[in-house]
Length: 499
Image 1 (tube, one colour):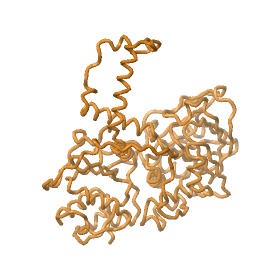
Image 2 (tube, helix red, strand yellow; image 1 turned 60 degrees about the vertical axis):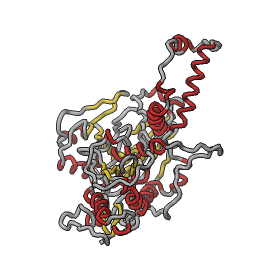
Image 3 (tube, helix red, strand yellow; image 1 turned 135 degrees about the horizontal axis):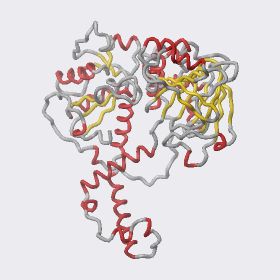
Image 4 (cartoon, helix red, strand yellow; image 1 turned 90 degrees about the vertical axis):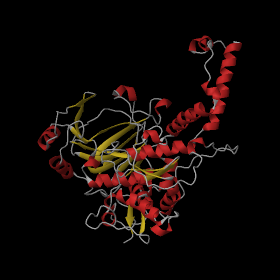
């Protein structure tokens, strides 16, 4: 969704009828203030909200933080994955920079997901080859995909496995609650999409050719062992790439700069762009989950949205951008004319481009682009995996519907599950309507439309998280409208009540 702030691109929802008091300056017209202060390195670790406690992935939704601040719980889950490395050191020294190998003496992922879990998924769900399950092999430096058509019946999958093929589950969070909870909580930490694949490889086998990915990955070894080999990118253009690579031949990648054998409980992280391959040892199978993140979540993606929107605004507001090109521009501009350095007419045309480029900088809607980035994340993201207490105190508990009054106390279930965008109207984007398939939204984009008068109330609700607040304390003049705002959030499953 390239321009979520333009209401013409949105599916209209019924709005509460109130009289508008004023129309604020649209955010798309704001011009950022330029400062001349020296640039400082961007911190990837925000200021800590609370002391981080390490949380095992089997405790997600079942620890003392699960009913308080989920931002702190999300930090704790990542901290538990990378311990003994602390989060600040992880971002400063490893994330996007180099691999991290953590060796453990016990299987801290025990019972999170097992071979038996995989079998139950196949038996209890309609899973299809290629869409949900791949069976692959890597023989004589060639990857072979052996997917039949249709349903991935357990007997067919296990037949290929016994014949030496690897089994890959492409979207296990759709069918397994543990994986869903892990991806859901981590996307709250990274503030971008988190996906997962699960790989089961028989002893002495390799399922995939050497390649690199367009995502940062965390490898969690669940059962057995697997030997990993990491290779440097072939050149600087493949460092933190925007697209995954094709399969490489062995003679294209040289010798690995790092090798290790992961055992159950171990973790391996490496950034996007690191060439890798893995093989299970001859005496034991391997089962691991790959958790991936930071797909298309770069400065370049943000700047791209800034420039696209800036050009739209410039074309609308500035006559110079709408003026016709000179008839002779093609005689002096173009690669074939680039050697005409001293040509006066070429210099004149290039100076004009430079002038327009400088003027474009006056229309940079950075805040709007940031909204678009977060909205894209919400559209791609998984819906929140609620714990039992959240279900009991939200619309999920259908046996006890809530009658909202002015003294009712409530809060958002997750702050990162919503994004408020304000222009002619107030639009609250959310991920409550999404499915558990990564990158696949539900029947329609998750939006709730409000009138401008509701903006302060919505901001108060968002900023108050994780504290409970009373409906009567919302900064709206009319009590009925206060109840209307909270009811709209309740009906979408975005809030929970204190009692």
